[in-house]
Amino acid sequence: MRMRIKQTTKIWLSGLLASTLILTTAGCSLGDKPSTEVSGVMKSGVYKAEAEGFHGQIKIELTVDSDKISDIKVLKHGETPGVGDVAIKQIPEKVIATQSLNVDSISGATFSSKGIMGAITAALTEAGANVEELKTKQAQQAAKEAITKEADVVVIGAGGAGLAAAVSAKQQGASVIIIDKMSRIGGNTALAGGAYNAVDPERQKKQGIEDSLDKHYTQTLKGGDNKANPELVRHLVDNALGGVQWLEQLGLEFQDEVFTVAGALWPRSHRPLNEHGGFVTALQESIEKNNIEILLQTEAKELLTDQGAVVGLKGTSDGAEITIHAKKGVILATGGYAASKEMRSKYHKGLPTDLPTTNHPGATGDGLIMGEAAGANLVGMDFIQSLPLGDPETGSLTGWLAKGVESYMFVNKSGERFIREDARRDEMTAALMAQQDSMMYVIADSNTFKPGTKNNFDETIEKLVESGKVIAADTLEELAKKLNMDPAVFTATIAAYNESVEKGKDPKWGREILEKKMDKAPFFASARKPTAHHTMGGLEINTKAEVLTKDQEVIPGLYAAGEVTGGIHGSNRLGGNAIADIIVFGKQAGASAAARQ
Image 1 (cartoon, rainbow, N blue to C red):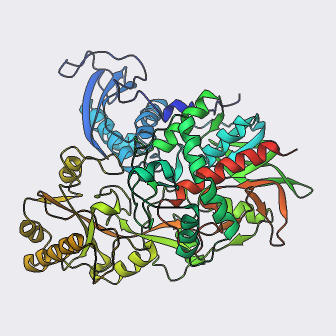
Image 2: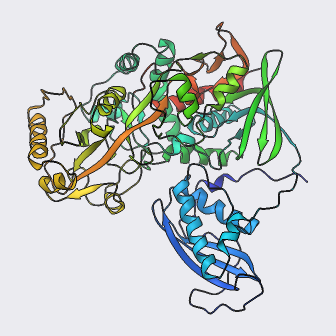
Image 3: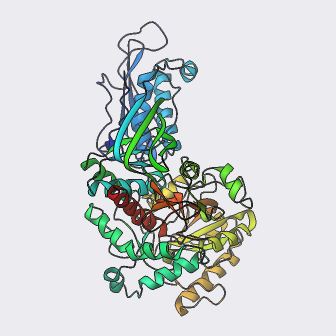
């Protein structure tokens, strides 16, 4: 019997926070005496428990009936839509289906997975279960029938580029299937801070910002050491605003003011009103409305070819073999390889092997391997961007004072500035790696972080302080002491910075974006270290998003978009250009594939 593998895309959006997640019907409440003691290790009844997730406590209600786990309700959680809340939905379902605690975490949602599993484990312990036995219990796996599907366009990868490509292809009248090896959609886009660079005269004029397409083009090309393909750069900047407008047509709302994300070099970064995950939400809603099929936990292993043209793929889907035929084309949107230490070592031997990454665990270069096997040329593979803003423990971009460059400054462990904060990302990272322990503190104050203010990852300043990710103090001297710095050195650094803001000139470091003084208590600091962030190299494409061979010939039926491609950013990517890239070229790949005869 064929397994049902199509996952309802509602798992990404929705309703999970509104009330409860009900898997089956439940019975009594905590405090009720278990109704019946049955044979075995568990007592029938209803048990409540909670554990710490990524964004606070996860509270559940678990029902045991006749020595079986019959129901798990999630009563409360604050996990991120499209990332952590996927674990909140899927893990209870797996526990009930397998009657065990031997279930996999959801990739990309480690802390949320641990939280929900911790709460379930606590409830089962209260019920008298043999928890250690349940952790090792093996679920029975029935043999699964092979699957065959067909569509006009097949998209490999359900991150931002893949979702944009799918929506675009559907708008052109093509039938579309999207696959992703992960248990959730969104890829790195769901984890990003959400900055989208585009020259936008209407918004920028209101802020007194002078900009032009030529300026964006020049900064992008020069910012990548002139090692990008000028035609691809021109296509990116010329179509970036059109991408913003396309997303607005899909229902995404942007804030009225643009800003400068770290490493963007100019104030043209657009931020959605729903800052964290807004891009994926808008694309996902469009996919749902258009009934585009998404197959999760479905991994492509190889591209199928016929007389040099790519005509489909073979892989696995939740344990079953799967073949999908593409009548018009296959779009590779599998992301980069920053999460693969092996590939990082292969292409960039100077990068520390133990460097953590901001990327989700699925960014392991699969599309590069498949594309090269089909004859694709790889360009710029040694260009890897490390970001100086990773969590010291996990490498994650969450958990810090993430707003525009206008709102913060950097100091090392001695309390001194060491680089202009509006520099290129590679320059900032190189400077940071030369500091003690390769660590710095991002400093901000209450001019930016007023009560209730959220960073770019939807985390409030109160939550950041409560979690210990951000340190707060009522005076600069107190903050210096909490950071184990000499208060005299730290306060002198702040005073010199404030003087630069007043004069509009930073004589020592040359910072150009000088808008806000650090003079309003409370003051805040968050520790940051280098982290592998973006791989600029990949499959060579043209402006139609068609994949090219080493001889610069088009591979019929093969398209690519997003971080799996190379040649767009050169040796260094400007902050805010990645989201523009995935939308502009994702949209282009979908349209090109749909138009192929």
